[in-house]
Amino acid sequence: MWHIKSFAELTTLELWQIYHLRTAVFVVEQHCPYQEVDEADLSAIHLFAKNHEKPIAYSRIIHCEDCVKIGRVVVAVEARGSGLARELMSQAVKFAEKFAKPIKIQAQSYLQGFYESFGFNAASEIYLEDGIPHLDMFLNPSPTQSS
Image: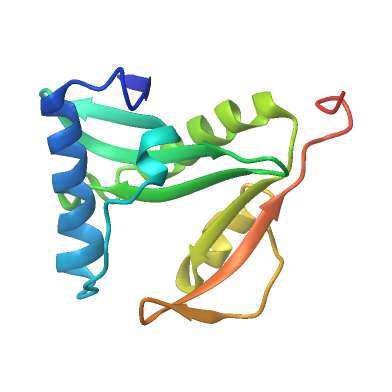
C-alpha cells in the first residue's frame, strides 16, 4: 500500500495524481493561492498510499544538511477519519529517522496536538505562512539513532 519513490522514479501518472491531490487540498480546499509545486519536489522522497491506483495519502521527505523535513502532509477528503493520517506520519517519521538527524515540520497550528502525539515539539511561535497559521516543530533522533 505504501510507496516511497524519488522524483525520477515517479511515473508521469503518479506525479500528476500527487499534484492533483496536493492542489485540491492546499490551494482549493484551503483557499490558499500559492506556488504549490516547487523545486523541492525534485530532490524530495515522495511517500504515498494508493487506493484503487489513486494516491489518497501523501507526504514528501527532504534531506537537508542539518535536518530532515517532512512536508506536504495530506490525506484525500474521502479517506479522512480512517486513521490514515496517523499511519502516513508513522511511515514518514520511520523513513526520516534513517538519516539520524532532527526531523522538522512546518505544521499548521491547529494540528499541533496531532504532531505532538508523535513526539514533535514546538520550536517557534505561531506565524502566518501563505495566510495560514503555522509553527515550526522538531523531533530529535534518539541517542541510539545518532552516530
